[in-house]
Length: 534
Image (cartoon, rainbow, N blue to C red; front, side, top):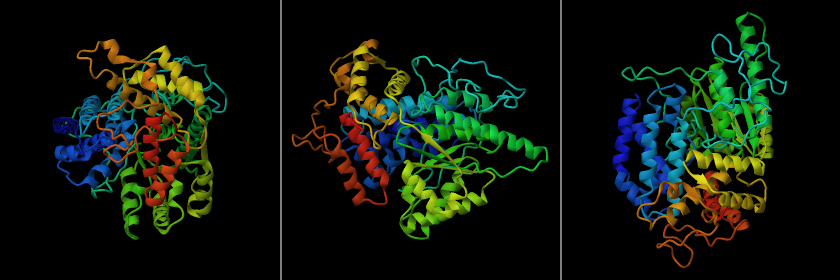
């Protein structure tokens, strides 16, 4: 892994990035890939030079998002149209694959590595056009919105169109394919500064043009499902465009808040759409950079009063010119630390109102209470976009798309097994939607690797093919697993009962770590992948 990290530093330098910041991304991604392996923290420390166990777990927390989305620096390169983005993505993929050898490899780490590498490489893949409608083009190459009624079905490319079954490598509402900045902007574990937006390096190759409004809207329309979300984003585009034209013409125009509230269950595409909103606002001239910085409570709140304001202000500064996306924002309510963070956010929103958009996300009811209880927030968030759960048919599309993006073929028997699991899985507020499909695929890839471990030279077909048994809910027996069902890392093994036990474990973690709500989410995701349950 040390060699892969050196290659990542070299790729970063060639792209005009800070090699140290790139190494930090690689270390966090590697920790997130290997975190479930026994003794992974010790091997990671030897390869990175960070020998404290706390440094490993802090890095894993930051890097979990990158198992399904491109890193912050890669996303900045893509946003700027850099020709070096592909080289940097390939270096990140090599780090992901090398990380599965940390500690004692398991089927789970193999799945994590494959999906993390695919997420980085898919981010720089050429976008696919839906091809369902001709795109009206203006002189600038953007959509000409002047003669379009945004509320008319079919007015925009792909909106309301009948869509074919996804082809291999299809994008979906969960696994972003281009330009997502889905990461923490601060290193709360080691006190490192927030990652600043990428500026073009004078010695690097001249960047290509950024994405146009037409391309971004086409990418939005190409996402699976999310019909009502797409319609609302298109409406916002039309309203904001007209507001800008009125201001240029010297006409009076009401101030329209650009901040948004996203509500919905986990895994419904909120982060992906937030990333596209950043690019769309940049194309409209409302933001100077358009990057997306994703954080949660743990990345805004510090250990002592007074420090939270400083920490939150640093995160906001890293998002200046783009979108700050706060997941589970309602977790900031109810204590003085969260209140300090919210008060700082309100001040920063006002100070940076011309070049910052804040998007807060979470479950519908807690978000409504959170916004209503704070006058500073309620006056600034006037638009709420609801993300519905995916249907079984849409989840099948998502599963096939993610498998294709990772260069796997799903056999008919495997697909039928996936559909059977969907039908037998109860829906509820904790159902993971696209994240549920991704967890199943990660686990299936791990079992696939375990199934082929004794074959000296598998064929290409064997390397690509996922079969029904790869979706079995019972993990293959590992040599390092204790008969008691507890792995050497202390995690519960596959003998954990489904459903209520996972929720009970999450409640126990929340009770022990009230200021780290994502700890429960991470453990639930691990259980979901291991057991095939939400």
